[in-house]
Length: 271
Image (tube, rainbow, N blue to C red; front, side):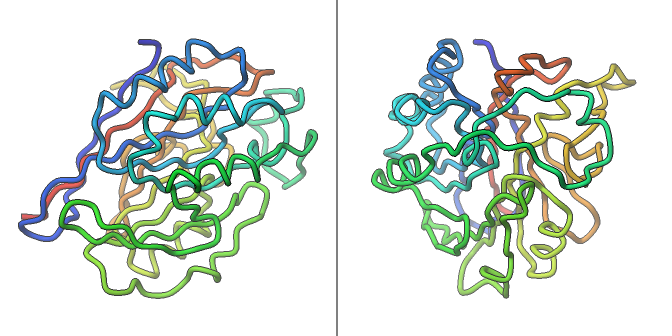
């Protein structure tokens, strides 16, 4: 196994509700050459999740759509929610990785357009729900979940107004987004969501040794570095679970103290 299984438990379900096992993955950045990663993804079905959440950046190559759908095939019969990231829309281009440590001035260097509509159709044809600009509900076990999402904030494709407002009649309200920019987290917090799922950060991708573990140098957005991966919460705000993801850009194939990961997040009863 060439990845880490990150596990977390979040006590957000109403009293008496059965636990829900969520497989959360992000940032596959798949190409046809990523044979080990493809095999790892195929193996995830062994975790027997009740729900799957993908927070984007599936693609890293013009020919990656069938590769992604094949890798996920065993999981596509399980209820799933997804959004896209910037790398689903545009192919990666070489860039100086040190720029990730500099302030983000919003300038983006895009590669050629990727065939994301084919990926979208492939996932939706198997029953997964696209949350890029929508709200939807799914019942898992005895729990009715209302989910809302945004398109990629790193490209400023997000428009939270499309999904804003109090949750409807449900047992749990969750948010799904690729890049966890604070404008999205704050908006979801104002709407009293319970949990937010995100990706994008790669856990910092390069982390420094630090007492008790390691520390991210950047999140590649305005999220504080201490929230770069895993489960965190600020007082009286929704839980945030950030996946450090599985892949990297084909032009920056390095991860230091931030190994590829997939998460198994178990939602449990409050009491």
